[in-house]
Structure formats: C-alpha cells, structure tokens
Amino acid sequence: MRARSSTIQILMALMLLFCWGTAKAAVRTVHVTGTVTNIQSWEIKGYYTSMVVAHTEPRRAGVISNRPQLKVDQTTGQFEGDMVCEVIRNKHGRWVDIHLINMAVTFQVYSTMVIRTPYAERIDLGAFDWKPNHYRWEEGALVIDTAVPRDTVIGDLFGDHVRISPINPERGDSMRFEFVWNNSGQSHVASFGDPYLENESYVVCELIFAVRTDTDIYTESWDHHVVLYLRPDTQGCYILRQVPAQGEHFRDIDFLLDNDLYFTARERTGP
Image (cartoon, rainbow, N blue to C red; front, side):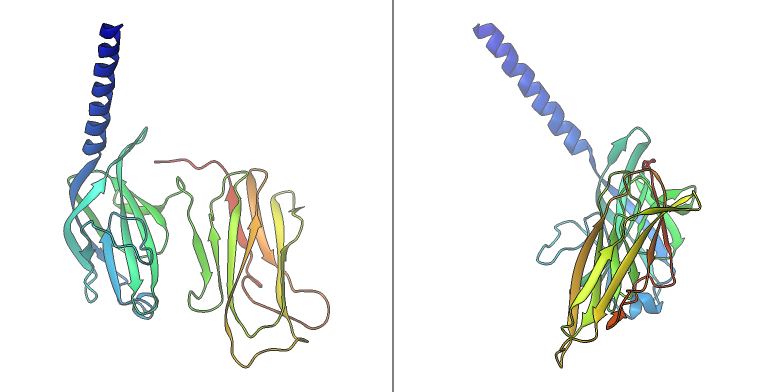
C-alpha cells in the first residue's frame, strides 16, 4: 500500500510540474509595432485623451494592470515595444490577442479594439484604422473575427445609443440590448414584438421605444438605461427593425428608425 501511495504521489507531482510548465510556457514576450492611421480623427480625438496597446482585458474602473503597456503617439499613431502576452493554442495554431484601448480619464470612458494575430516573437501590424471591434490578422489585412462573441455600439457613445452584446449570436444565445438616452423623467415604453418571417428569407424582430409626452417632466435631464433581451432560436438571417409607437402622446426615441439592423445567428468558426 505504501508503494502504491508513493507512486500516486509521484504521478501527482509530475502532473503538477507539467501543468506549471505548460502554464509558464503559455506566456511570452513579443515585440509589437504598428500605426493607427485614424489617430487624428474626430471619433478618437473628440472623445478620448489617450490610447494604449496592451495584452489585457478592457480597462475596468478601479483595476490597474501590472503588465507593460505601449503608448500610441497621439500625433503620428505609431507604437512600438515589448508586451507580455498569453499564447492561445487551439486547432488553428498559436495566437495572441492585442488590445488597443482608447481612454478618456476625465469621463472614465474606454473603448477597445482587439486584434487576434498569429504568435511570433516580432509582430508588425502595419497601418490600420482603429475601430471598436474584434479582428483577426490574416495575410497582412484585418478581417472581422467571427470566432468570438463581439459587441457593437450604434449611435453616439455620449448621446443616444444602443450597445448590443453579442452582435454575432449563435442559435440560442441571449442578445443583450442596452439602450441609453437622455430623459427628463417621462415614462417610457420599450419592447420587442413577436418575430415573424419576411419574404421567406429573414426573421424580423420589431422594436418599439418611445416616451410619453403627457406626463410631468423635471427641469433637468440625465441618462437613462434600459436593457432588453432577444434570443434567436433558429439559425439564419435576422432583421431588427424599430417601428413607431402606436397611439397618442408618444414620442419615439430614434435608435434604429429607418435603419434595419441585419445580423445572422450561426455557429462561430475560426481561430
């Protein structure tokens, strides 16, 4: 029994050593270079005060990363330096995720672009436009990454807007819609209608979002947040369509009026 117990202890020690070695091997230092070509655009300079490149999750309030970050030059858009990255291994190869994070310290606001690129000791991302989304680097170009759930924002981040998570759902996913608008205390109506098939091709989901105009309001206004959930139960093409509220004393809040939002529920593929 003692011999068997010793053998088990040795095997467990070897397994722990293997796991430690594997985890340690998964962290690498890479040299990253690139140029953000739209660094001078109003969408960046008008809202954000700095941009950093890091292998971290998007910045959270009160959380400070202890990993090195590269500063993007606010004039030229260039960045270069070493980063500590976790190497992602899957059946498609080895990858690292590089986050380009725009921050506005005054408003504690951030927005992130994620680029998944094949692992190498030196990574040159070339010249590209910064956009708050998930991308993959393939043959010297950026393509939308459909392999991970990704969010999107429609509208003005500092005005009326809707944040959709994820915008690339799989069948059965719960899509979260967070609507933000400036309001002075009016009551509101917000709901999704029952889905229906249009032209035997698209499943249409109608959205109603309006405030009442026959209620008392305050002299001041502030941002209001409303969250709705939509769950695509079948694979295929969908349209989210905002329709005017029916009845008197309603004023529509324009999130998607006259702009159909197309998305597809399907299996996510890729690295």
